[in-house]
Length: 149
Ligand SMILES: [Zn+2]
Ligand SMILES: [Zn+2]
Ligand SMILES: [Zn+2]
Image (cartoon, rainbow, N blue to C red; front, side):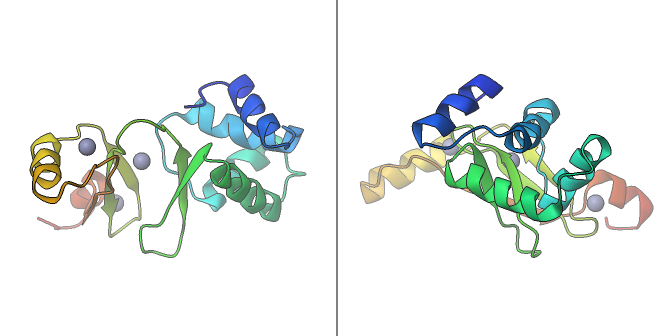
């Protein structure tokens, strides 16, 4: 799990890529922002405040490269906008809560699936290393604004 810009640099170098200033700036957004799920447009909006020279196309390319290298994880929640987050390799993915109203994506950290994983493993002889669980509904902010109960 790359937690510092130096670790990212090593990972890139191992694959013969360089940590260019643009890649570093974009990577730093994820290191600074912590556990959040950002679209390319979100990243672009943050980056352009201090670095108006970095275009949206560069952001897209860099995010794709960083996910190919498994530094970031690219996720699709079915709304046509990929989201990216730091790839915490070696742990099970947290679950995702996706708001149908505003598109916000929240992580839910408790796995809660140990029992289920054991049953599946025992019955199927399948070794489970990860899973993806998406819950669709309405976030707290949207629930307050509209009657979604
Ligand atoms: Zn699990
Ligand atoms: Zn919402
Ligand atoms: Zn997540």
